[in-house]
Image (tube, rainbow, N blue to C red):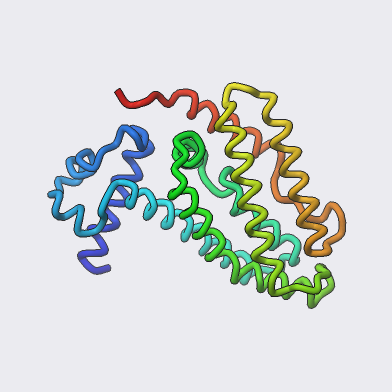
Length: 234
């Protein structure tokens, strides 16, 4: 690894640690510099602002998951339906991320309404997952698991649907983190999405399983607890 690459990784590692420990809002660029004993010039050689660091942290975490996903999909004998489930789960913030980072993104994108960060995450997900999803759909059409007349177009539609449903669910949780009753409409929406995916790809009813209820509810509750503990900067 080149020296410049090492410095960039050090910034990302340190920033990610501070974001978890202190919260994104409470972490300044100067905090990152102090932890690294780095000059401002050194930092701004790689990043132009704190939000650029967070985007890079998010991309790096996503790329690691994408690499693991591709290894599992292309290096296994899983069925096309199982592979489809794995891919679409990546669009669910709470299935794809550890709870502390999911809570951080929940606050930024859905409480603070950082539209640019949310759009960036969506774009990365669609762009990185689409080639693999297209391969899985082609495999499923070839072996009879899926039935669609639009195998080259359906993948993007599925990802956009999954991202939009994720946005809606996250918005519901961010709006009412103290209300346990919000879990039911969130699950209903995800189940509607699941059935819609089955119909779009022509898969048998009940074969698409995008989430495990107990694990997902536990993640929602843990993220909501973190969200309630967040306090604005003073």
